[in-house]
Structures are given as C-alpha cells and as structure tokens.
Amino acid sequence: MTLAVVPSATPGDSRAALLELCRVLRGLLGVEVTALHPETYGELTDLFEKGRIDYAWMSPAQMVMAGEHMRLVPLLSAVRNDKTDYSSVLFVEDRSPARFTEQLRGKRIAWVDRTSAAGYLFVRLQLAARGIEPDAFFGAELFEKSHAGVVRAVLEGRADAGATFAERPTDGDPITRAGFVNVAPDRSIRVLEWTATIPNDVIVGHGLLAKDDHRRFGNAILTLAEREDGRRLLHNAFDAERFLTTPKNTLKPLYDLVRLARAHGLLAHL
Image (cartoon, rainbow, N blue to C red; front, side, top):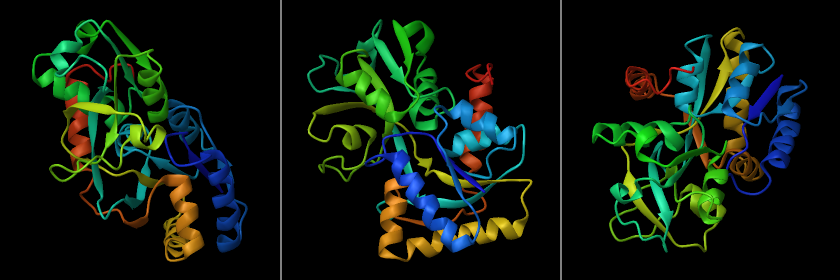
C-alpha cells in the first residue's frame, strides 16, 4: 500500500513525518505502507494514473481535475480550527508599497502550481472577474511547486507578491493560520485579496481499490485521530487536527470552479 504527499508548508520535516505515519499505519493495517513524496502536484497525479499510488493527501481542486481522467474516491476531509474550509489570499511583504492589487501591475507574482486552488486558481479567477488578466497584468509569473516555496519567493525578494492559503480571522484578530504563518511567523505580511472559501484538503483513494480497502484505511486514520500520539503524527504529516468523512456534496464548488477555469482557458494545458 502506498501513501503519497506533496511537500508543503506543513510543520517540521514533512518527509520524516510521512515516514513515521506510514510506520504506525503498517501496525494498524497489518500491511506494508510505503511513503511517496512526489515533488509536484503534476507528478502526484501522474503516479496515480500509473497505479503507483493507492492513497494520497490532495487539494480538492487537484482531486477534481485528476478525477477527469480516472476514478478517485474522497475518503476523509481535514478539520482545522474546527473548520472544514479556508481561503486563498494574495499577499505581499509588509514593507511593500502596494496597498491594492491594482498596484502590482508589471510586478512578479509567485504561484504554487496551476492545479492549486489556493495557490493559483481562486485568485486568478477572482482577478479575471474584475477584468484583470494575470498573464498580461503581471510582469512575470513564478511557479514554486509548494506554498512554502511561494512564501520564500516573496520574502527573499524573488517575487513581489504571492498566492497561498489562509484562514480568515475574526475582525481585528491576527491571522493565525496561513502559508506565511507556517513558514515565517515572525515576518510581517499584508494581505491584498481574500477569496471565497475552499474545502479543506482530502485523503483520496484510488477508485480501482475495493470499498473495503477504503473503509479499513479511513478507519485507521480516524483511529489515530483519537489517540494523542496519532494526532501528533497526523498534524505533522497533514497539518490537520482531526478528520471527518467527506460530506457527499462538499466538493461541488470545486467541480464548478474547474469548469469555470476551463472556460477561462486557465487549464488548457491539463
């Protein structure tokens, strides 16, 4: 059995965390569980198509797009701060003179990946709805492969702005969960754009596996979420506090988003 995760801005060493999680799952399931760490979302999808991945941690948008070519089954949705969704933000370093997105014309923007909901699609579509076509508006577009890479690109000055995930706080409260909080909690960041909410990441199973396999794997994750040591493992691997069975219609907004993105030509390469 294989479990795959793309490197991201999760706490600590995500590779080591995934290896430890697979070791514990091996004991619960009674089968060998191998950790795979594809470098990009595209590589993760390719490995799924080749049958080399059984289960994976994926963004819902990526799962929806990959599911256009094969059958994937959403098993569990992450819960963070008692929420099952988050937002995408367009951000700059606090010392940037930009106070509005329109002031970024000709500047360099860092994206995660063309299949990333929070790191690309939601911000792109929101800008397009206001008549801002990013290909023509920004001076350069960088694709950094992970949310952590986007944050580093902005903080290191390689990009003037970036797109990442964030959880909108109550009015007046600081942002406590975001790609930039995970990577550089002491750096000052200014958010220029908030998007509509996005469903949290999901644990996905290959559609060719038996329903009983999915049930056993999902139950193993839920069992770990009830144990103190298990919660630590899951947090380190997935940056999630607990999980719930993915509600039936929770991914519908993502199916609508992908259709809209294709209509705008954003996914012509996929």
